[in-house]
Amino acid sequence: MTEYSASTAYKAFFLGLEFFPCGKTSWKTWAPAKCKIHIWLAMQRRIWTADRMLQHDMQSHSNCPLCEQAPETADHLALGCVLAREVWHATLQRCNLSHLTPLAGDMLIEWWPDSRRRVPQQLRKGFDSLVLLMVWTLWKERNNLVFERSAETARGICKRIT
Image (cartoon, helix red, strand yellow):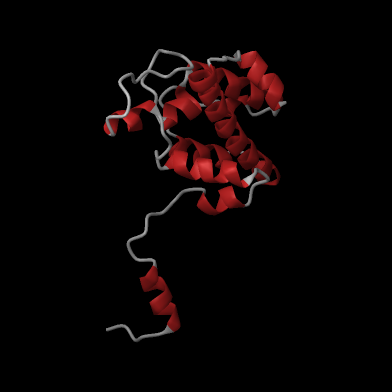
């Protein structure tokens, strides 16, 4: 039997909580708070993409508005979409990190921690900030297309980022 201590009480308080990769890391970035909250929601698949809206009977279509090639999910929108991958590649190439360009089936919750381990330690905070800002930018671009009917090319998005 374990004796009671402040330490055991503190550990018991967190029993059953899920581990969130890059959770602490995201709060230490240079990105604005709205980007930090968005990445947290995106990694938990809690942003209002078509797949989530379909689950709640709020929408009838499921394709990604940016590429119209695959179902819209948080992971697809952030990493897998053709437009997203083009923007990622161009942006990471400017940072000499093009080898980290996400693939079509990558999941954000796995890709980000794996990629950040491959970045030199002195560049990680900048890389982490870039990830948050890129995911936020792609989300805003999706919303511009859905709600404002204004689409930007990958080149235009990259130009805005850099």
